[in-house]
Amino acid sequence: MEPNTSQHGWLALVASPIGNLEDITLRAIRILKEADLIAAEDTRHAAILCKRFEIDTPRVSYHSHNEHHKTDKLLNQVQAGQRIAVLTDAGTPVISDPGFLIVREAIARGIEPIVVPGVSALTFAVVAAGFPADHFGFVGFPPVKSGKRRTFLERHVGRDTTSFIYESPHRITKLLDNLVELFG
Image (tube, rainbow, N blue to C red; front, side):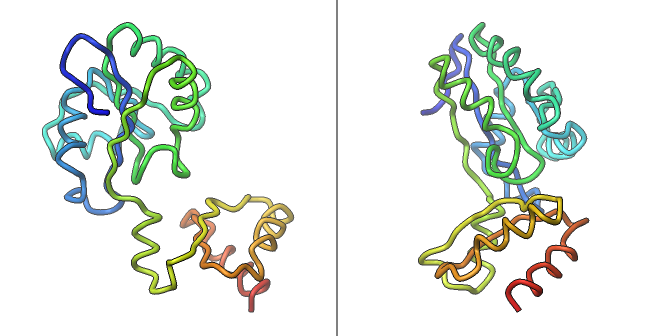
């Protein structure tokens, strides 16, 4: 579904570049310019993107620590006719980023979210890894605590598919140590 420019409000989930700002789509730029408000995971990251593409839409923070408090207000604004774009730091909202809650609540209210696809860290990794990709699994971020992390990783031992895991740069060394310990 494509938003129209009439009085009706809409909720758009906009994919953002994962490393190179030029990877944003023309449609994403247009939607961000047409929006009345950008609900951004990090308004500082969003400001860099907006400045580069001359997007002057106001921004408000919307991230994993405040989404439970802000979702209702944002959806009320959509129902009142506002056009809201959800933008994460890098990649696609909902895919290991904020967005699931607002999508679920929007659907419950009869609001059909507009998905503006683009660069995805997952598809980038699948293509760039050089591993078989006819069957693969995405398992997201592992737990931080060591016991839960080990259980999480052990669930993937012996699978006959390539698995992709997201991890913070601050914990990547620990994850690699865990993987060597478990998988050799």
